[in-house]
Length: 141
Image 1 (cartoon, rainbow, N blue to C red):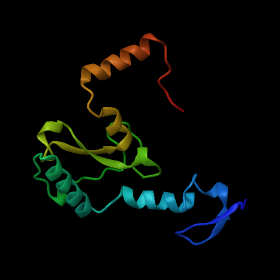
Image 2: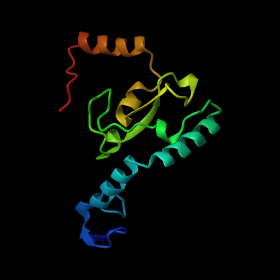
Image 3: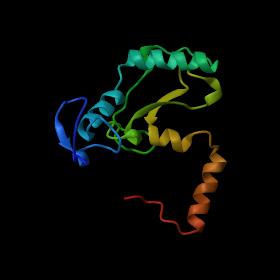
Image 4: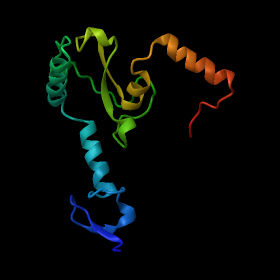
């Protein structure tokens, strides 16, 4: 079996270790793609969000200028640099039922948005209580 593969993006022949499993693009080119996705122009964010609001039948009244792109996630304090999915910026509806309206959206990390998801404050506090009671180390390296 051949231990080399050609990246479909940079067209360089590289060792198999330089590719994610069953990926045609090398890790370096994949990371560059992820980084460019992370900082989509505000106009593209606006278009995608408007489409999503229409599809979900929820209110939408944002303009492209309403998308404020921080460098750091305001919740987890991690850089929004697109190094991986967790570090990509996402648009969060503070109160989901209100939709994508001014004053109800923030840009946070994908990881924070996943953690927040549909949980209530009481549910999140229950998780914290459980972790503390069971002596689980909550700090990750």
